[in-house]
Image (tube, rainbow, N blue to C red; front, top):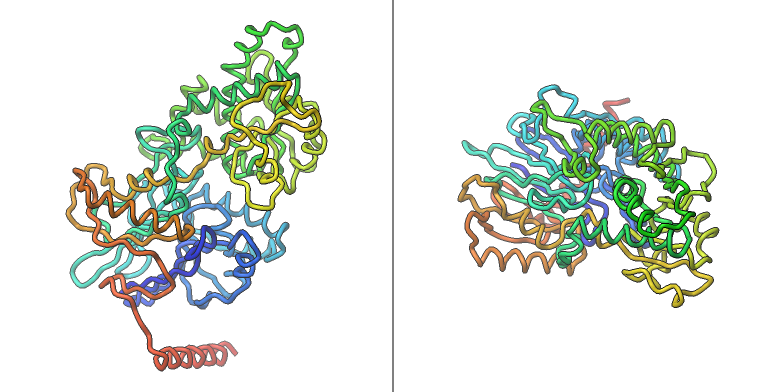
Length: 539
C-alpha cells in the first residue's frame, strides 16, 4: 500500500510538505519540506513537532528552491534525517543558497545543518531525460518532469505496484505560467503536464480563483510598458528608476527585460527625443547580494541542454527577443557575476554590485533586493530616491500586508502620471507586478490538469487540491467540475475532486484511513516502545 498524509500548505500557501509511506517496502519519504511564511501563526508552525520521525525517512523529493518548499530541510537534518534529497542540479544549488541566506537571517537553523544535507542530483547522470523512471525501493519509483515556475523546478510523478497493475500520483509543485502556445515571461520554456494515465494529481491552487488579464500575458505589452516607464522617467522627468525585486528568478527576469530595453528601446528613445544630455551612457545596476549568487547559478544552468540537444530550461524566444545566441546570454550573465559590467549597446551598460560593496547611486536604473522593500539594499535607495518626484519606483512582485512595499502600493498607478500632478516630495510608483507572476492562474491550472498532450487514455484521475487559501481551493474545484462537465475533446477524465486535508489516504483504494481513539493510543504506545528499543540498541 502507498498512503499519503498532507503535513503543510493545508490551510494556506506556504509550508508545502507531504508525507508518503510505501508499506510493502516500508519506505517513508516526503515531497518537499517547506517553511511556513506569513503572519505570526504561520511562523509559529515552523517550530511545531513534525508528525513523522525524521530518522525514519529515506528520501525527500524536492520540487524547487523556493523557501516555502525547501526551508525546513535543515531542521529535518537536525532531527535525524540522513536520507537523500532528490533534486535537479539547478534546484540543489539554488536551494543551498536560499537556505544559507535563511540561516543567517532567521536563526532557525545553522549553516552547518544546511551543509549536512545529502543530495542526489538527477541530471548529473549522462542519461538524464525528463520523465525517466528512477527506482526508490522495490515496487515504487519516481520520475521528474519540467515545470516552468523557476529554474530547476519540476513536477514529480510517483508510481507503485498494486497487485499486477501500476498506479501513479503526480505532484504539481508550483505550476508555472509558460505554455507551448505562449511562453510570455523571458526566461523559462513551457512546462510539462502530468502523465496521461496518472491516477492522482496533487495540484497547487495559489491562483485557483484568479484569471489573469490577457494584457498581462503579452510579452510585447510588458516590454512596451516597461520601456514607456523607464524612458519617461529618464528622459522626460530627468529622474532615476528603482525596481525592488526578489533575488530568486525575478531579479534575473528584470535583468533580461532591462537588457531588452537597452538594446531595442534606448537607441529609439535617444533618437526621438534628441536631447544633448541623452548622449551620455545609460547604466542599469543590479544590487542584490543573494541575487548575485543566484545569477551565477542561472549563468551555469539556464542555457544547459539535455542529451538530445534541446534546452532543459531556456525559453528560446529570449534569444530572438535579444538578438543573442544562448551562449552569448550565458556569457553575459557570467561576465556580470564575475566582472560586474557588460556593454549592452552603444551608450548602455549593465552592471552588478558584488556582495559587501556599497550602493551605486550613480546608476540610472537599479534592480535592488529585497522585493518587499523592508530590508536589503533597496532600503538605502528608497531613502535617497524616494522623496523626489522625478524618480520612479516600479513594483514587480507580491507585497505582503504591513510591508513597506504594500505601503508604496497604496499610491501605485499603472501608467506614468502627468508631471504637474505628482507630489514634489514623493517618487512616482508604478505597479507592474501583474506582468511578472510566475504562478499559473485558474485557466492555466485547468489546462495543466486536463491536457494529456495527445496521449489517449481513458483512466480517470482523482484531484487533490492543496497549497492555496480556502477560497482559491474551492474556486478551483468549482472550475474543474465545470470543465469536466463540458467534456472537451481529448481532455483528461476526472473521477473526483478533493480538498486535501491532514487525514491519511490509502492511494491503493482511494479511501481515507481512520483510526479509532483506542487504535491511535496503541499506535502511539508502540511507537514509544520502538523508540526505547532504538535507544537501547544504540547504546
